[in-house]
Length: 255
Image 1 (cartoon, one colour):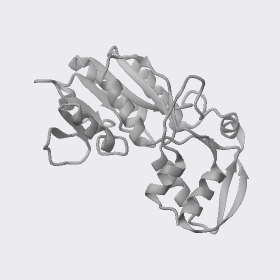
Image 2 (image 1 turned 90 degrees about the vertical axis):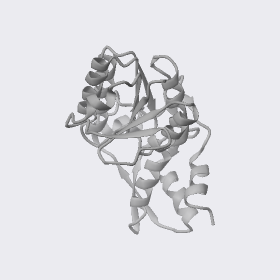
Image 3 (image 1 turned 135 degrees about the vertical axis):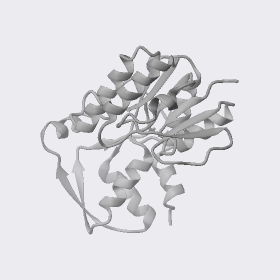
């Protein structure tokens, strides 16, 4: 019997794509979640908490590959260290981690924690693969929706995004997980770069709505990093095929 692939964050944005792809590839899947779910159809759910180190050893036990997709605004480095230590103890043969483009260049606390998480994976002694991806369309849509709720929409000037389809990222991660450890692989971003104002306008057009956009300058080192494109795909990156416009047409609709 083939050992299961352990997926953290298996019920999240990426996990909802990745788990079915692993099953289609004929792999048994074990999902670590903080909440109870009903197991079935080749997917086993186990309860645990990476940040509190609860149930992690039991989740990793017997798995040969771990696909670490779980993320949170805080504590990603703690979670990665906990998982990496458990994977090393269990003799896991491949640890795959999803990170973010620019974690080593954008001075945000969340990015710094994600970069420390990368190092925890690389220093674990477990053969590893790390993929950095751009912001998912889903995340960008959530942010744009929040901005568009108010009559005058503040738009950070100089901030550009290269949103990527979560399904394409999941497919790439599954292919990497089913292959051999590869270290840092080429980053993955969407096919187009957009100013935030253009993302907002696209959303409003799809909704048939209008708002006044107010340019706002992002100050300090964070603003400078974004103006320099530290969050955009570097040379050699891979680009996906599904654009922001394609995503909006499906999720929001075009009048």
